[in-house]
Image (spheres, rainbow, N blue to C red):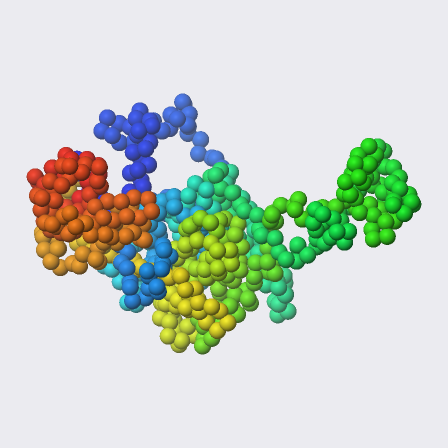
Length: 620
């Protein structure tokens, strides 16, 4: 039997997916009517039906609601904005999405689930200032920006006062729902990095443990965000932030950091050893062992011993072979205690990263501001950017230059992550792609950014990446780079505004919805432009937004396209109606997947397509 969501243009219903999976694995947990039986679930925990409520768990006010919100499907859509896109023919999957990030993430799960290699986010820190996103995109019939009380095309965020009693809870709920959806986007070998300060680092650790699993914790990195103490501070100056890192699962790995010229310069070849550059390392250990404490005669003929309390790292029996192979260095004059040679060719072709990231290696706040100033010399449009050097380091650890890895930032801010991707690709010849999501938060008229002509944060995001790609003083343009801009908006299908009657049964509401669709969408094909809904239809049918469309000349009665992305393909027709000649084509081509509009079919055509194509047929 049809359900309401079956007739809606929505993103995946993850709650339904999880219940369906559970039912397949354990049908005994469900009633004869197909409903999950909570009592049977209790029996899995304890045969005596556990009544004990005290247990270790992480709870806060609003947690259950945030989880429900995360798994509620979206009825929104993404619409391509060609006017603000830059070199769209060279985008290759790069995109900036203007919209509330939770709703956007839900939409992306249709096509980008398990496709993202690295996620970096710098979410709003919980400092009592504005940060709480309003998760009510589809409420009633109002547009999102009207519902949230913002100016046109802007979005209001709520103030999180510590006097509200929900100071930590509101922040946790906001993060919880987004992390739950983001996890689904990560590949099995994917990694997520989250910047955070001391206000919520303890809560974020517990939250990440719950969403990703304690066993998938990799590290809590300490990043030195400033390089000198502020003398006007009272107490202890805060000079660091954290970057918390988790993996999706066991397949993930952290790369070595590339070696630097300074580190390689520590190797030389004063004796012209044929094996190449080397450096001298200590040949003693920090403990006394009788068998390894003995005199060694140097080439100059003098005896040398380890320092008191130490001993050689090799035995007396091993010494002649080391000397014969020229693996010991006795100093330029041949009279010093021997050091062991460590050849550059024998060390790892990289450096194992640590949890301490000094500003010299990962940038700092002042550097981030100077970097932004070079891009916006007329005005500083953003007060708290992150340095691209920090995010480049994260990308070096989590992505490989040879692969077209997708990197996502859904708190994009000024767009630093896109610049980091572009810079690193230029450095190592990589093929990484970026997906940025930023809420179109209005900029106050009193702020410098507004005076410089930026009305929304997304204006800054898009303009920064545009200027980086086009080049600026001292920087060459990225000739082979571009990006597409998309806007989160209401669905083009009027049916999303249908409100079920609470006094009707589910079956009755389904019939009401069908009648609503018939009434509201009868003239739909006259009113809408096909190109406008291509993205909505294809994204919700699992196609990534860098798909290609090729018109198929073998169809003469309808306009039919072959749509392809890197993972799938299908035939698509948005004509109304679908001609019988088009239907007949699929009698002989049952291997094809076909997508069309529900309203384009009468009962006979729909039955024929379903009969010939089965699950490969989708009526939207």
